[in-house]
Length: 399
Image (cartoon, rainbow, N blue to C red):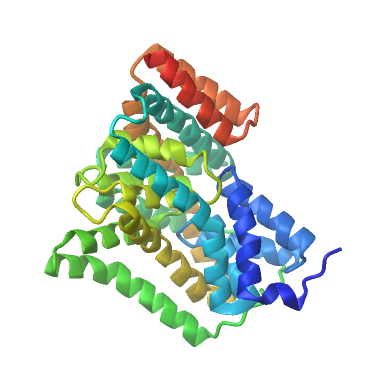
């Protein structure tokens, strides 16, 4: 058994451990949580099984990308704020750099990526989002009220496709949750090994809220592409409940209607992002690098990446000290049940518009999407293989 030694408490050691995970962990947030459990509970024994389950529950309670936040929290508990930064950088940079390179290739190659391959990537996005909806609906929408809430949320998001409509759906779902659902009483648990004081936590949360409310005001006072870009990505990172796929509708509402990124490039990038390891949120780096008329290239990618992940840091550091009280709060738990069902609805709406409507134009497209879905869901093939296969098949279909 490899017991945690002092050696792996150094931020640099934390960075290297997470870099290995960032280069090898394919398969989306649920898979990442499995890799983390294997690495930090079973192999390194940084924390107990129950503490880990509790940490995962906290990060699923907070908005933002759950698997990245668990990584940030693990780094934080291991070697403080520098450890949190090291864990995030190791886990995120490999796929972020690869996606920025892809965006630059698409931009400078012009027609470098054949139309058919682009089309195949858009079709595989249908299968990926369908898989996410299916998996989340099965675990979250377990009864009639939750399933109804999911479908109503999807209808609301389709009728009001702007970012404000999505926000409204999430708020309404929380209210319905408080009204309808009773939370189960918490089981016994072990407190997390953390060293953040309540006052520091409150400061981080205040900074999170100040940026969320202040950036739009700043942007209207001093309009400019840089501020509106930071605001858009920060807001997307702040409002995502339930994992990376949910960022798709939020980002699409921010970057496509404003003309920053074309819808085709958006969906092709989203499909390609599935082929890379690490967190799905690094898709923001692809978008930042693909911007029209705002900072783009490496600078744009870095700005978008930092802006979309900033809320994760502030929320994890801010909420950890208060998690004990929050776990006991049945109202908060019930609201969260509602939000989770609403979020599956948002994703269901995104599956139709923009994902389905821009990828499925002919019966063959639907056939390819079905095959990709089968390969992901039932044959359990690695996503990068399915993405590559769809890109090839798209190339043949269009050729």
